[in-house]
Image (spheres, rainbow, N blue to C red):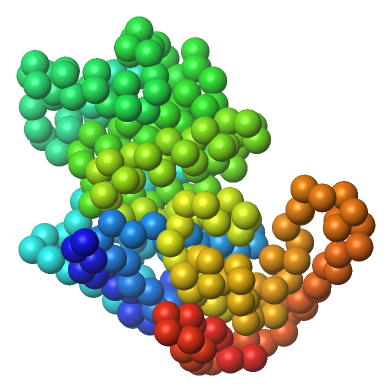
Length: 281
Ligand SMILES: Nc1ncnc2c1ncn2[C@@H]1O[C@H](COP(=O)(O)OP(=O)(O)OP(=O)(O)O)[C@@H](O)[C@H]1O
Ligand SMILES: [Mg+2]
């Protein structure tokens, strides 16, 4: 498999100056590489900087320090999928127009018969009936709207899809469907997927590697099964211990670990095992 690096974040930071006395360090010296066709999960508590990373990769924010390097012949086509698809879709546009919009924005022909075929094909691939093409977002369920958002992101055949908590606003039963849909599409198209979630259990089954963020920094990054089997950083251990297990007996006895997030973080990451990086404590 071609697993060339397509994107590198080198000591990337993003500061927001709130007023003259207050600067928020949303992302702080982040190093990360993404390879072609890989699925990387990024998790961490609210406010740790996940969406800011997503926006910088999508070019919505420029890093205030460090650099983002795109490899290959051209800047990869990056598409973003948001948590709140209802808000992300124009309420006055029909499903077909929404899905074709990226082509229109890029100045490509969006009315040719081949594009129409592609639209029908995409609807089918994301599990939407063709008759929904003429609906408005307000006439769809949350899960259907997220399927529309996914179809739209695939219209321009992205090399990199950044999904920022794409299932957080959906019912539990729908969450599993959307995750398995994204998994299927990723395998079919082999795009790189950065999958952002609050919760480690969500990324376990979709990502090959998982990164844990805290206060704008990565504290741990490892192949997913390695991270779950041999967590090293106390914050990762605490997150893992809080994941519910469907066994009432075990649940009653299990020990939930606490991590004081006000603890200062170490300055360096080291490679504990091959591909398993941990921030020094
Ligand atoms: N445009 C902005 N202006 C000022 N501060 C911002 C801005 N965007 C984000 N922040 C701040 O930067 C920090 C990181 O925010 P970010 O949205 O990246 O976190 P997150 O991990 O995505 O959180 P959540 O899980 O709640 O979505 C937070 O303290 C947030 O308040
Ligand atoms: Mg966010």
